[in-house]
Length: 152
Image 1 (cartoon, one colour):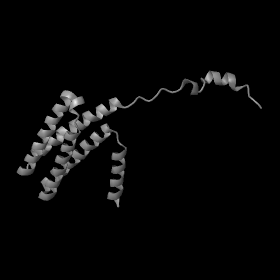
Image 2 (cartoon, helix red, strand yellow; image 1 turned 90 degrees about the vertical axis):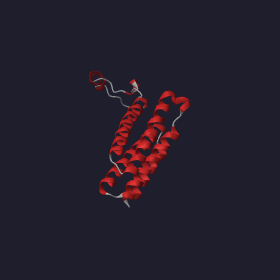
Image 3 (cartoon, helix red, strand yellow; image 1 turned 120 degrees about the vertical axis):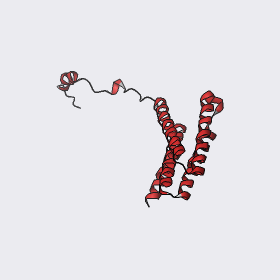
Image 4 (cartoon, helix red, strand yellow; image 1 turned 60 degrees about the vertical axis):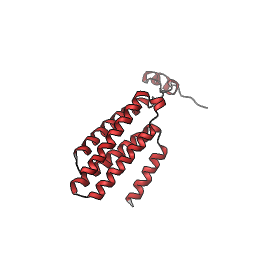
């Protein structure tokens, strides 16, 4: 039951997310998949480790597909190279059953997620300033005008 509620929440979050939030969600999912792979590796659960690495690899492929090389310029090219490197490290971790490549990919993903969160924060619209006409009068004015009551 909990899983169904979690899946529904995640689906709602994905469907209502803007592109910046979607990329952040992909980073978070990849981070979780690599963490799971490390746990399964330590526990000797080969099939589960392989599934988690495959999931992280698939997420990286989605991130590559989402790159806009026309508008992204040099940054999108560098991200493509970094994603390719992480994919190769994930394959290496899976074939060699080694934790070091997983730890490296986890660190890279965490750094990218943190940087992306900063980009997202910078692009958030600034809250509009309060309407000066909707503000309460200063306390002094309230004392002056408060004594004259209106009656209809």
